[in-house]
Amino acid sequence: SSSSSSASAGGSASSASAPKKKKAKKAAEFAAGIDESRAHYEKGNSKIEYAKAKKPSPCMACKGPIANGEPRVGNRQESHFYEGIQTRWLHLNCALVGCEGGVHRITQLEGWDRMGYDASLEIRKVTGEVLPAVKEAQLKKDMESVEELQDLLT
Image (cartoon, rainbow, N blue to C red; front, top):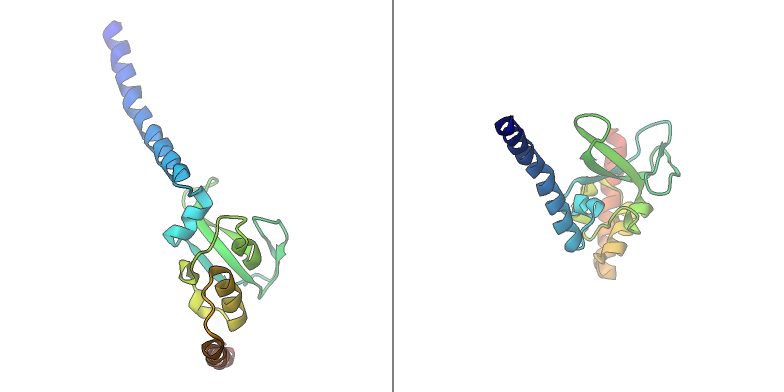
């Protein structure tokens, strides 16, 4: 009887080590000043796009509607409801002001290169990546001609 109880205790100790490792990892991230949502930006698990749905989806930060065609930032993470990955959408402004972490470089957002000039400029103002005036004017001109071509193709 005592040998069976020690065997079962040994089995539960090995299964208990996995949650301890997860807790240690989270504690290390917290100690480094990286909360769970900021880690998504740092790992590149975030994307940006124009909202596609005809029915507005809610922003996970402010709960306001994200209208069709409006820029939105998505944090991809493991789902708590099903096995797999889910995307939590935020207004561009909510993501930029740090409600769910923060964006430090425009290249952290997958799809940044497919956004229009106005959305790109809004992000780059927050990240400190605005170009000198002459280069910014040329970038705007170049991006607007690309946007016109994209409009023709879609």
